[in-house]
Image (cartoon, rainbow, N blue to C red; front, top):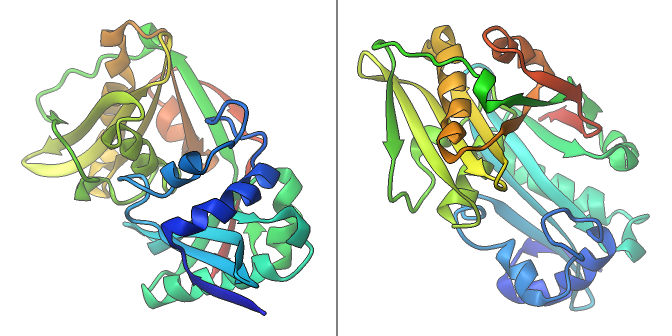
Length: 287
């Protein structure tokens, strides 16, 4: 009999075996997962503190997990985000994944989430279709040379750099024009010390209109995420340009980001971004 329950740190020992079967290609862990400590690192810090965590246990052994959370959206209300669903390869043709997904949805429903989104590689899309998640929109990977980013100097928008941040700022707990979850995820890597960079808030007439995160990936490349409030849509180009232009101070050559295709025009309206369609697929389900 399979039991769905809250995840605990001791479960990471079993999850190492799960990850070795499902995440052998994982980009941020060169060579894949080889130690329990690597798995534990996935479940601690600012990057994890706001996520729900459920595991599937059978005969005293954890054989799968799902990680999820809710995020505010100024237009559509609360959105649920499934960050990952990992099932032991020997159980992937069973109902374990469905049970974990439905259990996560029930938690999100109690938080008044109206729809849930997940990001899937093409190979897993059939699973999400089976549990009534369907493709909605596309993801674009965008990039630009730092020297081609326009400098938006105007007194009507004030930039405030956040320093000594130890928890995710309330201002970054939402998505509007950014891809759901991307702003908080990138911010968490800075707070946890995984990457170096900056967190910014933008104000107009003493009211918050936007937020931005920029992180140094390597000597030549930086990643960023920028978002605006409903009031900030009119100054979205300023928020984007200032956030994306910050790495020029580090002498970075290029900045990159992942955005919804629906909002590509917001980003390309004031700068010549290069862009390509991501192979990953955004899927969603109404609760």
